[in-house]
Length: 572
Image (tube, rainbow, N blue to C red; front, top):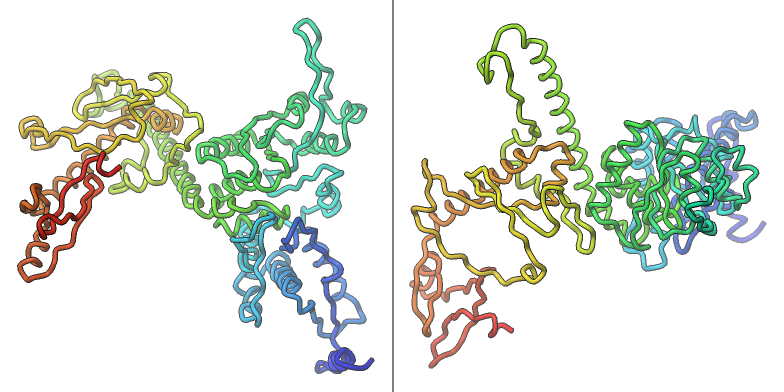
């Protein structure tokens, strides 16, 4: 062999170790191929890792390779280098139980750097995953018990990932992602006709006339104890096929390529958590292809419960099912990951508080016949403690908690409480126990301009002890969500009162510290801060300030500059 290739081969074979034997070289570039959707090229999935481990162990265990150095190499192509490096690092974490930083250390100074992975979408890639993201995602999944090569079935994985065999993959021990089955709708029956004779078990399913992918889906779901199927796309099959086999089915449909509302994610997380922890059954989620919308909801739950970062969970899901989470959905997970983790924190604290309360109530009932305590209403009956969240006992957490709650998404239905009417808000006086209901109309909420309310008199502002009165508005949606989380209505009102007092006192303190001076200019007045007046005395031009409630503009009148307040008509 001549030329550069011959010289490279000669140099390659001339490398020997202390035993005088030439190294053993091997590569996976042409053996383990990634099935791309568009311009994506990796990372390789768990099936590839399993095959890589088998090949490597065969080489290391061969007698001909005893005392030989084993060299794993790849093509100089950027995509091949990234896949080979990622596969080796994942092997060291999964099989050899290395820590991620040890597996990544030999790759950290690669020159040129390893190429990042992109999504499977058709648009320009604007979100990338590094080899480090994949390694840490796989490592965290292993630490949380979500992945285990000892229980992994390569034959099952490679069979059911094919479109003609069902196109589904297990993302975790409790979540299965799959593409939507397609089947003609069932004929409509009159009330007098008997119901459809649908299969109820795998034996009946075998003789039923259904496409092979749909049969595989139903049979696998029945065998692996799937308790809930969540459909995210338009209806392409009758849900009765699942319900006839004892599998619950629910629709949570939103548009392809978009991101779900946070209220929908919260509902999905509650359903999934109850199905997994209470019913001890598994969940299957699908959209049209089982990639984008499916990855949003499953990824949200994995972040919620196990504390993944957005990059880690996207990388791990693609390691289990290539192509998951597409386009802007990657940014959506990145932006909302803190919210999902905050939900887990709140739910965990609330559950601990309720458990502690139940234990204290049990202890109180046990000691009720012994010594009466001072907190008794009478000598025979005990008071029922007000149920409250432990978050209410933490100081200075109201603003952070309110910011973590999901905001209502426009266009989505809002849940209303049975104690009020849709579209109404209840205004509660802070120091009164009565409530009044005021119904709002569409015209009254169409983006009104801010108007300064008349200042209340000092006599109406002050109560006993010098505490100012305030009014708070209860949103029925937030109240219903709080009640669903286990909070009482009185507790919810008390929390809003505390928050209103905090903001009111903060505003009064700031107003007391502020010194203003009114100066006339061109027929109107301007509010100037104390430091502005000081600068004007030194000859420095004062900076114009504009508040959210007032729009100012500079006018020239007889050569004198001034500031005047403009009306809404002038602004338009």
